[in-house]
Structures are given as C-alpha cells and as structure tokens.
Image (cartoon, rainbow, N blue to C red; front, side, top):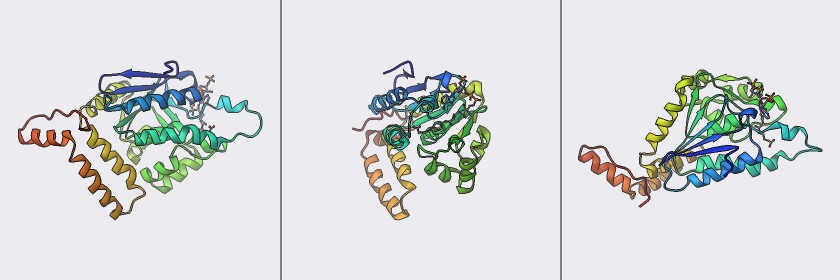
Length: 262
Ligand code: T3D
C-alpha cells in the first residue's frame, strides 16, 4: 500500500480511505489508482463492514491528473485508461459487499465528481462543489456520470451540468437529490465517521444485498426486480443477523449484529 498517495485507517470494523495528493487536489495518477484498488479489495474482507472515502486538504478529487496528459506525445488512447482504471474503480465501489460512504470535503471535479456519485451515501461539506468539468477540456463525462447523474437529478439538469461544466454548490446538490446531506465544513468528518461507524454495526450481509438490489434496479423491469428481490430476500433470510434481528425485536433489546455470512 502506498501511504504517500492514499491513507488507509483501520478503525476496527470499518476503514477510512483518504485520497492524498492535496497539492494536485487529489487528482488521479496511476499510483493512486493502484493504491485505491488494492485498498478496496482489502475492504471486501468480512472484518471490514463499511468504508469511508474522502480527500486530504481543500479538495475531494479533481479527476484525472492532467499534468501527465499535457506532456504526452502523439494521440492518446483515453479509452484504455478508462478501461484499465476508472471503470474498474466504479465497479469496485458499486460491487463492494458493504456500504461505501463518501465525505466530499471540497471540490469534486471530472471523474472525482462521478466517483463520489458511485458511493452509497454522499455527504458534502457546505463549501464543496461538484463540477462535470469534462466538456471544458473536450472530453465526455466518464466514471458512470452519464449513468448516475440523469437518474439522480433528471435529464434536463444532467444535460446542462455536463454541457456547461458549471459548478454545482453542495446545498443545491442536496436539494436536487444528487447527494444525501450537506454538513457544515467543521462538522463533516465527525459526522461522516459517526455514520460509517454506525453502519459498521448493522446487518452487513443484508445491506450488501440491498445494495445489489438497488444496483440492478436501473436496468430491470418491475417483473425482473420482483424476482431479484425474492432471490435476495431468500439469501437475507439465511443470515445469522436476520435471526438476531428478529430475536432482539421479540426480546425488546438492541440487536447484536455480527455481519457474518454464516
Ligand atoms: O485522461 C484520462 O485518463 C481520461 C479520464 C479522464 C477523467 C477526468 O477526470 S477528465 C477531467 C479532469 N479534471 C479537470 O478537468 C479538472 C481540472 N481542475 C480544475 O478545473 C480546477 O482545479 C478546479 C475547478 C477543480 C479547482 O479550481 P481551484 O481554482 O479551486 O484550484 P486550482 O488553482 O485550479 O488547483 C489547485 C492546484 O491543483 C493547481 O496547481 P498549482 O497551480 O497550485 O501548482 C492545479 O493545477 C492543480 N490541479 C487541479 N486539478 C488538477 C490539477 N493538477 C493536475 N490535474 C488536475 N486535474
């Protein structure tokens, strides 16, 4: 793990990942992609029950580090970097078998904005902003942006944000349903950590199955989704946490969930 570009903090039951290239607003180079991919793979272990993603310094993430691109000779094949780095990252976040919380501590631009949107619950500092910066440099929104954004806020708003590349203030992002909540800057990390720690005590398998149902919902018909809910509920009903949840309810006590598969 390269601590220089990604800080990984094990909080005992949940993991905090901090993008750590603050002088470049935590924009991605290959090293940071590699470190984040490895950390998310580690987080798939049963001992980790929730993940918090944030950025060091005044920004969350400014997408691709453009300094590497500026000096490139000849035409670049950006499709290959999307295939090698950004698409696997989005699939890792969406596919992770536990909640991923994002604390957007400052500007989230380009792929940085869409990586935030791929997370399960997004909190943002009141001063943060979201920028679909791609059109300013002649690129297409990537990292799932053209999938997530119209679904979250509707086609008209998504189109304008993507074609104009205008910054969207965190408060408007929350009003429009792009993110879950805006928090005062000074309180953001305390609140994000408390939320992640709380999720790490919940029935992790059930949350992972809920995430799987929501992930599939966008492309499914109602009939397909009903069938999927049936199958996932069958799985959830076999988990020890379901048994514990029902037992605790009947005994009028707080459940003690383990998050284990069996
Ligand atoms: O290439 C591929 O593999 C394809 C994949 C593409 C995915 C993408 O994400 S494409 C989109 C790339 N990102 C951008 O276009 C955003 C570029 N950044 C900005 O527009 C602005 O920096 C912000 C609006 C995000 C913030 O503005 P501001 O005024 O708050 O900060 P700043 O002064 O522009 O940035 C601070 C420093 O970070 C500055 O360096 P300096 O002058 O202090 O030495 C700036 O150059 C650097 N920085 C910010 N973003 C990037 C960056 N350096 C490299 N790459 C960046 N993306």
